[in-house]
Image (tube, rainbow, N blue to C red; front, side, top):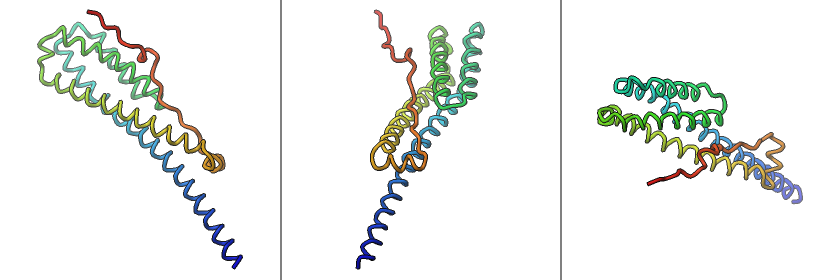
Length: 182
């Protein structure tokens, strides 16, 4: 009888251990999935940019410097190594794209161009998807980091080498409230 109780207790401990380990793997993999989603959306966004640049070139031939900067920023996103580097490069690209969007105000024909309008809409939709993916990633990183820091999972995490993940950071420039003047 005592042997059966000991075996049951051991099986319960093993099952609990396996359950906690599996939940840590699940949290980590979900964070990696959201990281991948950010990459996918950034890639989609950078793939739209050459079409946007070509469309704008036809209307704003003397704005070559602005367009060259957009292409350079796009290449920086594609060549970044870490997720945070990609996000930082994408933030710079966003600033460069704002200049392109401002060009549309100076060129009514460009603003009325259907292809330009479609590209602007696609970029806007993609930007929303990038923002969502960043938010989802940070939420999942928070859940994962909490899981590996709380008892008793912290013991299992330490044994199996689970490491904290970093949140995506927003540049200080983007934290400033925009100034509105009338």
